[in-house]
Image 1 (cartoon, rainbow, N blue to C red):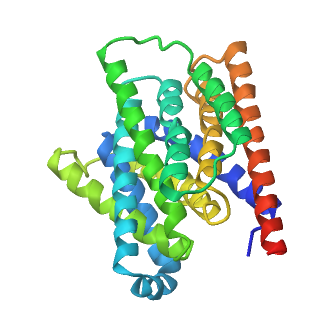
Image 2: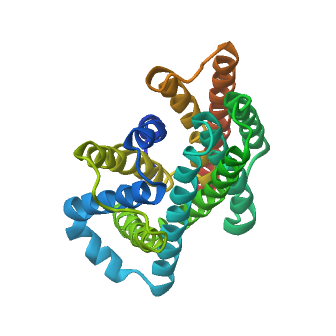
Length: 302
C-alpha cells in the first residue's frame, strides 16, 4: 500500500535534517575516520537488534540466499561510502566534501535506467541538473588547493559511487523484505566490514575521552538511525533517483550548520546556491509525483 504523500515528504525532510548533522558531529568527535564509521554502524545495528530483533530474525530466515547476498553487498557498499567520505572530511572543506559525496544521484539515475530498468523522466533529469548545479556552486572555491584537498575530493567521489550502489540495492531488496529487517542486517554487515578494515589499518578503537564516545552515539542515532533509515524506508515507496536527489538537501543543511557551529563562511552566493539546490529538488519531486500518478492510473485501467 503506497504511503501518503504528506508522510513521505515528512520522512524525507526528517532524513535530510538528520544527515545534515553528520559532518558537524564527525568533526567534533575528532577521531580517525574508520573508527567513527565503525562505531556509527555498530551502535546503529545494536539499536535495531534491541528494538526490532524479534521481528528481524523470522524475516531474515525466510530470505533467499540471493537476497542475503544483495543485503551483504549493500552493507559493504555502505561501509566503503562512510570510510571514504569520513576520511575526506579531514582533507577538504565540509562544503566540498558534502557536495562531492552528494553527486550520488547521477550514479543512481544511471543505475536505475540500466540496472533496475525503471524509467527516469526528462523533468526529473532537469531537476537533478539544477540541484546539482546549486550543490556544486554551494561548495564554492576550495581555499585549500593542496594534495590533501585533492585526495579528499577523490575520496568523497568514491563515497558517492558506493552510496549509489547502496541505494540501488535498497530499492531492489525492499521489494521482498521489510525495511527493519533490511537495515538491521545491512548495518550489521557494514559494521563488521568496517571492523576488519579498522583492524587492518591499525585504527584505534578505544582509549578516547567520554565526550568522543558520546559523539559516536549521537552520530549513530541522528544521521544513521534517523537519517539513513528514513531514506531506506522511503525507497519502498519512491524511486531510487528521487530518494537520492533528496539527499542534495544535505549540503544545504550542512553548510548552514557549519556556518553557525564551525564558523565556516556563508555569503549571498551560497544562499543563492542553496535556493537553487532546493528548487531542483522540488522540481525532481514534482516529476516523481507525476510519474507515480501515471503508474497508478495505468494500474487502475488495466
